[in-house]
Image: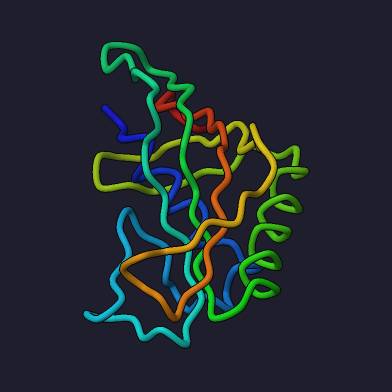
Length: 139
């Protein structure tokens, strides 16, 4: 079974539009470990969706956190995601469990600015997204 969260992260990691993040797209922030607080990033978390692990297609909701040093950069990253959501192509994405096909990556909310009590130097924007991922063979 393809993990839809891994597919979402790998999908975003290979997008040229997000190259400025330098690969800082993960399922949890790594500030204080691999990332420094002057670097922007995206953190994706499975939201309260309930993936059906027994079917070949997943339609899940994600929390997407955009971290940056300032509000403008955090918002620019969110705007880049909006641009990616307008892509109408299906995108083949290689994961640890095989090849996934990302059908869509669509916003379900607007951005919300939220302070981060752990990372006081960082700004963050929260938004919710829906991704459709399939493990059906890509020809």
